[in-house]
Length: 273
Ligand SMILES: [Zn+2]
Image (cartoon, rainbow, N blue to C red; front, side):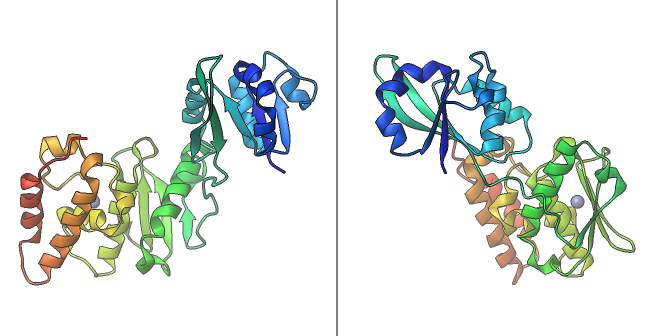
């Protein structure tokens, strides 16, 4: 059963295009109209409640107004992806009809069985806890070498993150400054504890950035990166990822692979768009 909700502002369009809508959905709910479920009958239902309804009932939404849904998406942590596409153009209303789909691909909150969470994380607000668990799960996929290791996960507010190895591998992450890069950096430290990698912070950055594009979501802390490249990090992330991979190759026969990578960053023709 596929369902769609027609928002207030596009009802006029919907009546004229019902056959197109019905060719894609077998259940069409128009806000404030009799055929809709009770919650949607209220003409003054807020955008927030419409969005919540969509999430709960796995419905798509047709609307001309995206701003409020984006605000909602930003404020709500239970979903991973909001997709907006153009469904039609409404000539009389002079606006595009947008299709909003809240992705089924929800955050993966199923904790990896090798990961144990510390009290500091267990008692954290759910929005922190969910975000950390989901991002760590995703990051761990990139670290098959750790798949048999027990990892303890906690929270820190002192720095972006840290990794320790006492009785077990432990990483602590700062929920307010959480990026895939930081998680990758701390997981790379765990590989160092296993004796597989060089131990310096700069090398941790290189090995993290080389591992997967997932970890290119912010510039590293220790490597020397030109300011302009930091400002255009995302635009150049594939090139940066490649430089780091190449520098690890270079390391096989040379000693100064970190310097080699930093030189390559300094010389990189920066893509600004
Ligand atoms: Zn570090």
